[in-house]
Image (tube, rainbow, N blue to C red; front, side):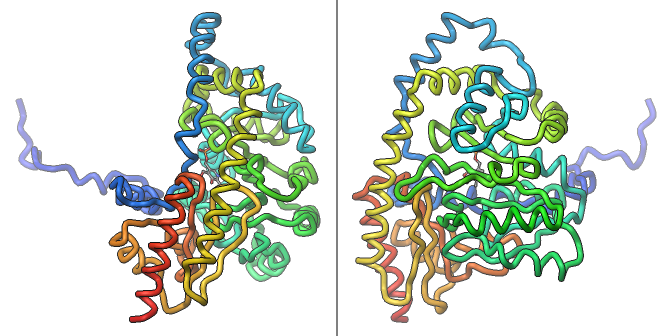
Length: 409
Ligand SMILES: Cc1ncc(COP(=O)(O)O)c(C=O)c1O
């Protein structure tokens, strides 16, 4: 046997073999922060978690038993990439109630909306391709598209959501066409803002004028606590919008079932992208979601969580007004799971995080939601769905105390 002098049994330098795009990948700051908040004595406003005590466990158990008894061969088998046909039909009907009139053929079931974001990246983003978003924006989208070496260009986000009026200027100045505009019209993550009807119309008008496409991410639309539903962008411009929905916030995130609604030619492309990723989303999970939705349980459940999350939102808003020092401000979300709070400029919410953890309370520092890391230094995202009202009062009180101490120094 030949033994080569250069052969080695030592450690492998894995870095040498990694694809270039991995250099853009970072693990999500939120996942890292959530590790710190595993300590049960820490009150966490950091995650985007639904309240686990409200999960419809018994109803899901019944659905599982029913499916395993009545349709085991289907539930446990491979299925089509597009998704479970009855679920696609149900979603087409539901979307029509919101004004999105597409047929089941325009719907692709995904493994959560997060997979939809990744498939969109895989399908539309070449290295260096510009993507237009608001800053701040959803961290998971930044993470997904960084992996495809996207170049982020951004407009601001004010108390009414994305500053759509800045888009035209940005496009003209940058002299390049974004692959798509990413927009979170309802109860923005992290902003908690809702894009008013006139901004939605302006966005559609600009997209048509400059021949741009829109990705409308709407995980929270069904969780409205006040005011009226607004027209989805996809209903205004079905020909140029890719709409994303999910059961994660309305039912349970553990099922990992989301969906894309888009023009048929794009659904076909995304189906090809999904085939390489996971062939299809879990058949069993799709059938559970379908069963729970078709039997009207989802509707009842959404009504229940809307009431409770709405109360928790009110508790958080009242507690902020009571316990936080002058110079702070926050958004008033009409729905969803989050609000965006600003503290006096003297406080950097990244450094302040350590002090908050000492007081056993956590949040996500604002900077993490800026694709270029160029903002949010005195802002933070607070979640109000996960903790009970008592815990919310105590957590906001502790943060208020920590803020007052920091300002006094
Ligand atoms: C704006 C936004 N898009 C997508 C997702 C991903 O959701 P899913 O659990 O469906 O993957 C989230 C989750 O928090 C979100 O806030």
